[in-house]
Image (cartoon, one colour):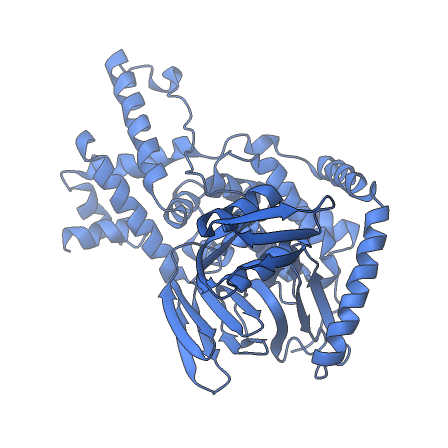
Length: 172
Length: 305
């Protein structure tokens, strides 16, 4: 394997490039993983601080993997694994100008049930499902972020979906 | 195509145009579609308000100035660590000339990243050593004491202790080796343990193995990580009391004197690592022992009532 001229993560220009490239996705990941029991923005910055502290040992190609490892391990040092409940955005009346108040109320009930159902998923299932369906990340990329196989990601998405389906049966 | 299979393929985006048509013709098509569409409502909020790079640098500078305001303690810590290294190095690391080491002092935990991004959290009075330069060829790390490992996928990863060797391919596990006690808990992946008699055990996630006084005990693990790391709690299951006391001494930098206390009685329970009064209560009350903590908290006397 040829050794390329190593561009250093410690280099300010390289590091700021990496920060701008990955900060948004890392923030989203932290939010889906841990909810907002701790400020995801602070945790995201803590992860980048760890990267900067270890910049001598991490190549630019490995920076993303490093960041996600740190993010995954963050709460292992915290006091408790609190149940994660994600907030949902409000049903915006202007999206449904033709819909009746009854529909809006039904949608609100659906969202409440959905929120409960999401909190019943395991952390693994919830994160894989949301990264794929909300953030549009491909299975291969999610596998890379989480440090698991692509098959494992697909299984988690499928399990998550089935659990949601079960909880939402009443809305068929 | 069978319905369940069709739904799964749709969920994982593997439908052909024909299959897509079949899917849309299902009578509960809207039900399925709504589940996926509604996920959007749970998108991470404020993602456009996260810290910019400049904000981040300001945040970092603030955190760093908070750390360096206490300069006197680091000097004392280094003196202690240096002495500790000398003591252990002369006995132990003869194979590791020029080793990189990471140490946790009494009452400390130390989080370390290895050259391949694998992470190690070292518990109190424990030490790891490895060779940074040959890391790519052979990932081998010596451990004295206790540490949690989160190993990146890659070449074979070995943890060597005085009592047993652990081989992994990429996983999360906790290894504890103190005097005549060796215990490993596997939280994710698969590890292979080699004991001094060369017997080999394979431990999948959710399993533990203990080797004490030449006896092997296997058990299960439900947690995601060791309690000393996750909850600042040292937990024990049917271990001789002196094992508990030794860990207490490491966590609190204190020593015990015993009066009529049976060191070998088996103990199940735990103690918190950041409150000495609470901690000592939880390991004395169940055994009907009374305790007396010295003024400087460096010495505790235990006696049977």
